Length: 294
Ligand code: MF3
Ligand code: CO
Ligand code: CO
Image (tube, rainbow, N blue to C red; front, side, top):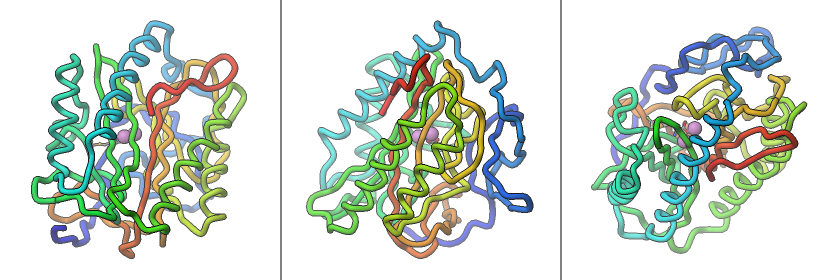
């Protein structure tokens, strides 16, 4: 679908504000393409701003419930023959009918209410009435909802019709990597353990994971500190009240990517191989993890 060519800029995304708490996920001398996540702090302890109050957590939880319901509704309706813009319409309408606001709409100029990334599109796919879902496609639908000022962010993969075993396996392994990472989310854990578990698991299956686009703090805003790298790193200490996403982008082939030159958003695999992603928003609790939206 469409014409893909290289957009010679960094991935456009993520208005972080303060970058003081970005985790270490680099070796010295590494040149990380993090867009505006380009200032890397060695800080190992979360700043107080990263810890949500009980009241904020309650608001974020409500946003998370609506966000999950939107993805459940998409799951019930998605099928071959639909356009990716039909998915956008479903998601948009459901959100506003339930008192929410779709966070992507107008975010840094993003033109639609959800992201729909098909096959070799890694992320930030723009819903399009001319892009029709075909039997055998895999698609990521990424939904972020604002409710009463609070944000929750999640995405799922959907298999359209009869999907080949290779694609199915990629989608399953990516999901399993996130489920493994959830076990690392607990007080005294480290953000870097999340990346280590994910990258080791997907590498075992012969896949690669993007280092330069990853998870993020979320809740009071769309994209907050810290940056959550899905590769090994030491990373920040996890403490109760932190809320962030885990959202590995896993490629069947090489890790390299490019950004669509026409729309300046959609990220594709450089080698045309398939890519999968699952995203959860999670909170660190007193003794483990709470899934805010999935
Ligand atoms: N939901 C994406 C994420 O997981 C961000 C999308 S930005 C948008 O961080 F503008 F494309 F919506
Ligand atoms: Co996210
Ligand atoms: Co998302």
